[in-house]
Image (tube, rainbow, N blue to C red; front, side, top):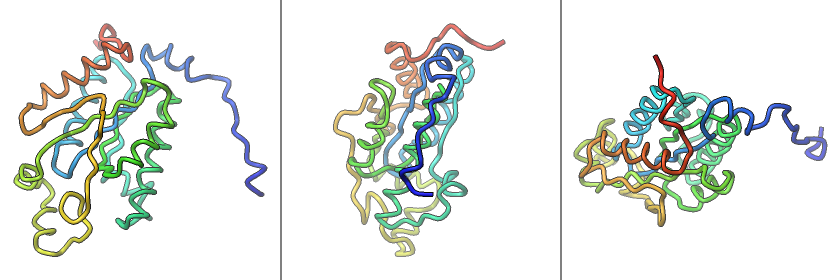
Length: 205
């Protein structure tokens, strides 16, 4: 079978149909920032609030994805680019399913994040810059990675031996060295509500 025989199949049930049933848009909330900045914590906390409102959600976490979908990838420049490309494709599928999906990846390269954004419709890719000084991230060091980097056990580490390209105009900019988790999540929920991407009137119970 050649590539020319592969054709995109249009579904009978459309994204708009799913969004109407869910009473919210299919949206990607793309958390980006240094290791230890709080991406996974904020993604989980945001999903909990959205879920409690009755929304359909899922979180794609960097470590979890590398246990399955991307377990064949290493940490070379090429593999890191492919890692984010695959995540962007999965996020697109979740949006098409009408699901609010959170992605928590360092995603250090601006070009890769722009490519992920280009796959989304207008207003349905929400870039959240989880901004935290590397000194604070290193003090937190929840996985003990920074210690290994400083000991020379890990090379090619973003923020120390490899550059991180911060977003130039993210939808949401969070200073997690100055803000609590609750304050950060409230800003995200407020953004989604103001842009009519979610409803705060569903609820569970």
